[in-house]
Length: 221
Image 1 (tube, rainbow, N blue to C red):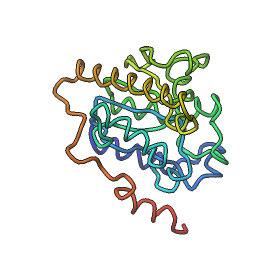
Image 2: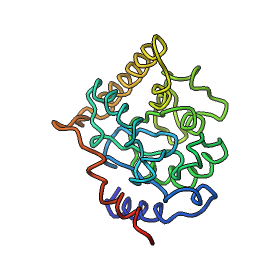
Image 3: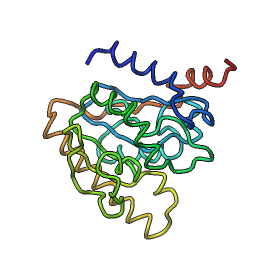
Image 4: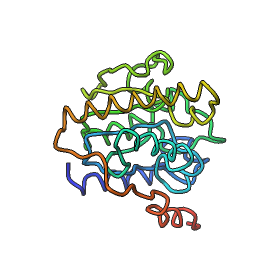
């Protein structure tokens, strides 16, 4: 992969208006982190904060993800984070399987053909249904390794937005399950890309990093 090829793909993505979801969003969101990482994290779709900043998982869900990743020795600048759906659905509703299929076939497949990660973490049911099978269930299939159509091993875990809705013992159980899923992904990365370091000395401040993009997206066209 060349830097120029990935940058060209990102610019094309940010100009996309191929489906109805674009009508209700500020614009498509792209990725954050590094396309040279062996670890790719694939979420569902952007929420309000992500729509503002133009990148995935930087709102409350993203901040919880950062904490979970930190517990297994990963910082977001050392992995590649993207979404199945690139535009925020109206009222933050869960994207349909059909919307996921259309958007991911258009953009995610191209992203992953360039990035070629060694390991994928699928966050939530929308990512799992695209990467594994439309019949997959996050409650049944999380924590199980499967091989994607790209030939890349993947493991699914709960989306952090789901954890934010839990309380009490359910929350404790959910956090531990996510921890062990992420730990398994890190161990697989260490096996397949032993020379790569997944943690930086200082974790990035993603909101500060993309503040200029946020301003550009807010300004009238």
